[in-house]
Structure formats: structure tokens, C-alpha cells
Length: 439
Ligand code: PLP
Image (tube, rainbow, N blue to C red):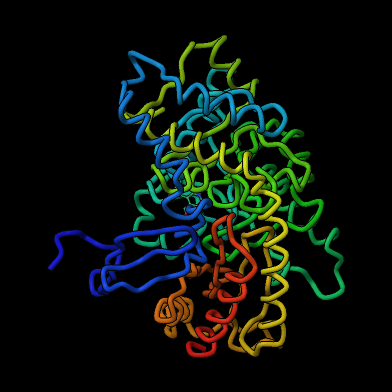
């Protein structure tokens, strides 16, 4: 008997009692390879001694100090670390407790920026249909996951959606990747013109789409064109790197690989690696300056912003990633894992696409590989794969997305950055059995 309102009321969950390295253990003594990092969170795996020691030391020193009275050493140090490694133009960090809060803050920053600049007519947000930016009402409005939005629609502010950059489904036969990228980006310009540029404040997108699409990177040139369009119309560009950022794709930020810098970037999940709840909105100098030269404050705040324990955990996680050169392992073992996935699923009747970057990989599951026809939604295939995988001691993240009214089934693979080749082999072996059993 539980008194928790769990995500699924009628599903009995195993009780997680421990974790070490890439594995989690339940109260029945079963071990699970955490090939999804929870939901692309546990980038260092579990029980990392350096992070545990840093947390203990911080708890003994200072657990909490309210930000209207004090700043703190770990928050200042983390901000410096993040800004130092951030894309061009980013100058400050705003720390919150997770991804939804980070995106809420980003949208409010964008709005306040234009108010400070004397352009209060800019209020429209443009986002993409296949996207997820969080579950609180503001960012649920921005996101394009209809299944999550449907019943809350009357409560959501009006936002505007364009198609995602999703080559597997939307690139036309015979069309080059470059041409497709330009065509997909053109939708943004069309939407800005339709709404009136002086009404649009921001465009928000995930550089590599996670939970709604299973690790879909943009095609080359798409994000650069998006940047140009935003600049032309004075629209702020927000990159949601909550899932794909902080090293998961093999570079600290996914957008580095596209050579594009946003005005605001949000990060969370891998920032604290699950050791504490933490997220951040990283903002560029021009936004900071508008606040500094204008009202002198960002009109926002939560009780737990800049939480010292959360910042200390994130700082320790980032120190380990740098000290142990883990981004190189993300690239190398990521390429190896991908090659094993391609060997196992390259000709699989129900795997339409294998994609992603670094240790952020996805499979798109289809009923018919040649027509790309998705499975019937009632089959809930992605959930079945998850169940079959758990039964084999493997955690993979099931992702469902909607595009053109059809539900897609995706499997997201986002293991800890400490993954080795042997464990990668085991992941592919167990996942193969799970997909065969479910499909
Ligand atoms: N943005 C993206 C891209 C995400 O994947 C998620 C969570 O999955 C969020 C935002 C919301 O983050 P959180 O669940 O920490 O609020």
C-alpha cells in the first residue's frame, strides 16, 4: 500500500534501494543496467564517491541560505564554471531546481527583456510541434507534445508551433539534407511574418529532440538558418538543452556541433547528474545588460534558487567530467554503442531509424519498415519495450511523440558517461531481446 500518487496508479514499481556505477538495485536484489540514465539524468552513474563526498562536505558547511540575503560559494563557483564553457555571448547563470523551471525562467527573461527595451508588444512564443519543454503550465504551452497538453489546453497561454526538423519523416524523397534544413527553417520566418515580427519575443527548440522523438538531431545548416532568421527579426533564440546538453552528445553543449549560439540556453538533468535537483537558464550579456540598465532585477524567483547543496553537487559532477575526460568517452563509446545498435537493428523489421549523437541515441519503432507506418497507438509499443527491458535487467526510456496526428514509438538510450564497451554490448543484447519480445 503506497500513499504516493505515482505516475501510473495501477503499475507496481520495484523499490530502488541502491546504485553503483551504471547499475541500480531493487529491494529484491535485482540489478538493472541504467541505459537511460533515468531520463538522461545520471551522467556519472550512481554512488560516485567524489560527488557523495562533496555533498557531505557541503551539508556539513551550509545546506541553505535564502538568496534575498546571501549568495554562496558553490553557486558562484558553478556559475563561473558554466559561463566559462558556454557558447559565445552567455555571461550569467540563473539556477533553479529542474528543467521546467529553467524554461519558465527563460520565457520570462525573454518577455522582461523586451519590456525593458521598450517593446512590450513582443509576447508571442514560437516552438515546434514535436517538442517537450516541461510540465508546468507556461512551458507546457510552449511544448508540442499533444498527449501531455490535451486536457490542460484551456489553461495554456496561446503559443505558435512550426514543424520540427525531423528528417526521417519530413524530408522529401530526393531532397538533400541541406535543402530540407532550409525548408524546415523557413517555417519559422513564415510564422514570424504571419504573427508580425513586433509581436514575437522568442523561438524555443531542443537542438537534439529528446523525449518526444528519441534523439533527433537537426540536419546540418538548420540551426544556423534559424539563428539568422531570429537575428533578422530581433527574436530571441532559446535552446532547451535540458536533456541533450551538459556533455550528453559528446560536446558540453549540443549546439556547439551546429556552430550556433543561443541568446538563452537551459540545462538541467546532466547538470547535477541526479545527485541533486538542479537546472539553469544561461543568459547572454545583452539580456543581462537590459535588466542591469533597466529595472535592476529579474522579476522572478523561487525559494530554492541557487540552492547550495544542489550547486555543490553540480559543481562536483562537472569537475569529475572534466578531470576524467569523460566527454571523450561519450564520443568514443557512443560511436561504439551506435555501431552495435546498427549491427543489431540495421535490418530489423520494426526499427525504422537509428539516430542521435554521443551517448544520446534513439530507435524509432515502426509497424512497417518500408512504409514507416507507426504501430497502432493502442499497442503502446514503447511502453512494452520498457517493460520487456526491465524484465531483462535493462532501463531504456520509452518516448512517444505525435507528428501529423500519428503516435510514434521511440526508445531513448542515454547511459552514464562512464559506460564501457562490454556494458554497451550487454545493453544491445538485452534491448534486442526486449524489442523482439514486444513488437
Ligand atoms: N526540456 C526537455 C528537453 C526535457 O526533456 C525535459 C524533461 O524531460 C524538460 C524540459 C523538463 O524538465 P524537468 O522534468 O526537470 O522539469
